[in-house]
Image 1 (cartoon, helix red, strand yellow):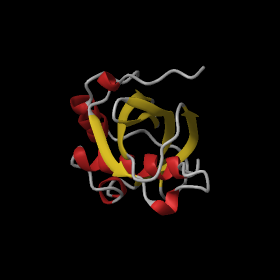
Image 2 (image 1 turned 45 degrees about the horizontal axis):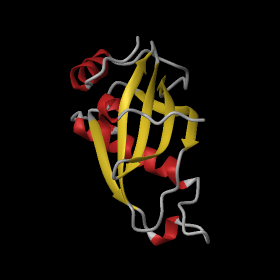
Image 3 (image 1 turned 180 degrees about the vertical axis):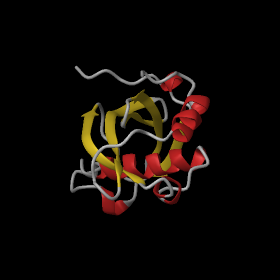
Image 4 (image 1 turned 120 degrees about the vertical axis):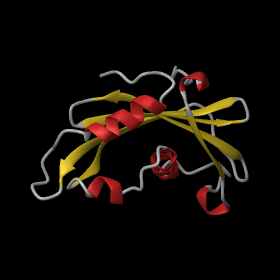
Length: 148
């Protein structure tokens, strides 16, 4: 049985209302939309850190690529539900970072997930170390320190 994420671990939440175009004939959110929800919430997480994505990362000649996503569906989201999407950096590697995600509707946990990004050099398309300024912003922002 999947484990519901703890809300207390998250410093950042993004609210999103489920739109009609996102539900299937059973009136529940089609599974692929959860990755869009994660992407939107991660973009807003960067904004909350004062980072203009992708502009601030490209100034160092880098960018991020998603290399792994995992979603565990705990309960369905339905049309017009008001979702709270929690995003946090759970792990900071040398050249990668792992975002943990939790989605709730009111107090019910709906989804737990992970999105792993690798930081790359734009010219070579090979992995490159995370910029120190990015690490500093993340560590100052997170309530629960990421694994390193």
